[in-house]
Length: 580
Image (cartoon, rainbow, N blue to C red):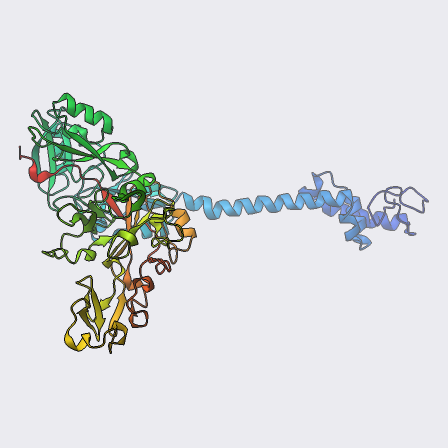
């Protein structure tokens, strides 16, 4: 019997062409083909792969004999052989993978013992567990353990053996603090149990409230550590509601209009509402008062502060010109921003109000508690302001149409835009002369010393025109000083970033549900001083602040959760609450 050497099909006796593939038939003797076929057929019949797969072993033998394997593998029978071989390879690979990985997943791993966990750095413990194949998640909670230390495993015990496929949760200490839940609204006994577990002293106060007998307030606030925005870093305070006449602590978090009505129901009718930047959860709600929430008060005027977002920035950071209601001045920095602002690592800054002038104030500045106080207020520009210096509020005028053609002095300040964010900076852009800042409106710098241009000494007066004075503005400089970007809730931070305002990009975006401040870091700049003599001390040429000529140098660092100073909402004045 003969077979086609191209496709392996059986040939009809005497045919010149294969009836299956059409190939020409060569003259092979049937006996020779048969002998070869029988030899190879006996070999393949012992192979379970071909014996049980429906493969025509005679066709295989014929293809091998005639050295035409390529033709065979293109045939139907050849494709069956390839599929069978592939199946065997897949099975072998699956067995290999199971031996390598499946068996490994069943390995037992011993979790370190308690003594080792306390002595080793937490990150080292986490890294070692991951190297052994465990999936590790790190969560944080308040505890008596030092910040960053190991507290416990949430789903395992020290010394326990677990499979390498185990997902383990490691609890990292956030230091002592007040949990978001489980303290406020509880009895003093339950609340003290939680507070005492933090390992620091606990003090209990009384606070006027309609929710008597329960813990109404805490210091720090729920969700905050004692090292971040609390009144005292070594004490936890709890306030228990008591009856009394005053400003109820319950007003905190209450709708502003509801709070006004509640006070009026209590006979306290002289009430004013004031906006203040707040977290998203407190928008439109009371966040503070004067007199302070929870304190005794028999009668008189009450100021209530309620939360607002970036949509109110221009309304609350500016005021109408006394002479023209169509003109807005950027002079009103303090009321919406006073308070404590802290990073997640506990670096805090306290912003306080400073009114200028002291009688009938027009400007409201911000200052730090350790800022020097000038008795006659002549150095008001050393506080934090919104705009450049000028002898009148003209440099602080927002864009308007009342005077066609007038150059807009604040066109490069964010406050003039629509992002809802704005800058605060010290010195109002004024230059240095020598090592001192300006201390008089009429001063000029001559050879590194300030000279009163209105009453110059005789050796200066003789030159007549200031620009003829030898050393005029020599020794003057522009210097990089305190500079802040304030970002209220719902401000368009993405638009600011895309404009090129920042240099670089942060790793983790700040929490935009809370107002925050970014502080420019002069250590990140190669140049922090510029000679002001060529510019005659003109503020418009100061590169470190926005002016009518340009924007400020790109801001560093870029927005990042680690460098953001978040507003710490502290509605209660603990110094005015009696100890229980």
